[in-house]
Image (spheres, chains in turn yellow, blue):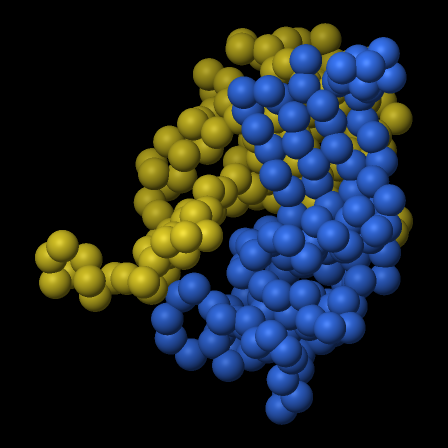
Length: 136
Length: 136
């Protein structure tokens, strides 16, 4: 380990937009944060990033995501953390969530839960930020 | 596997408040969602649950969490997901985040990043909800 790497241990390091895009494309489950009548909500969803770099997932028309996130400013977050080494990274995309009617993305997101998941939501990242921390 | 368990595969199952409390106490990293001037934010933090069942973590006085979350309605979320079996659970606590001055919790949260993390934040869960999904 070089002096530079030792120096960075325990410190936050900002990720570049290219690193954020690569990490976002690599994961399959993220969390969407949106505002509801009962306050803020954070829910995990499985998603895909389409050819245009947009985040897409499907949900039930009766879910709170469909009810509140459509047309609203949301944050979409992915991370990976390791308790043992106390290391990890987190990437957050901010944008407006839109309900997609008709048009389908490639690849198509396949929700884990069964049942009617007929609402497709897409989030075009307007900002993409991330950081990592190295353990002690 | 019984018929009942097969029936539940791929279906959401709501978790009881006791299950939510147990899962929240078991994890060490969660995500706090709060509103900033730039829109919603979701950031991972390492935390402890104190004897009173409150979520506590430390942050820098210059962090966006310290700037925006204090006194605000927030959501605190933990989860565990398994891509291979497409199974997982998620627990969300909602409450008002408070900046703690002076008084210390037991155990004391120890932030992973170095540097001045002198602001302790506490969230008393006003609502605690969770669900799990079993894979296919």
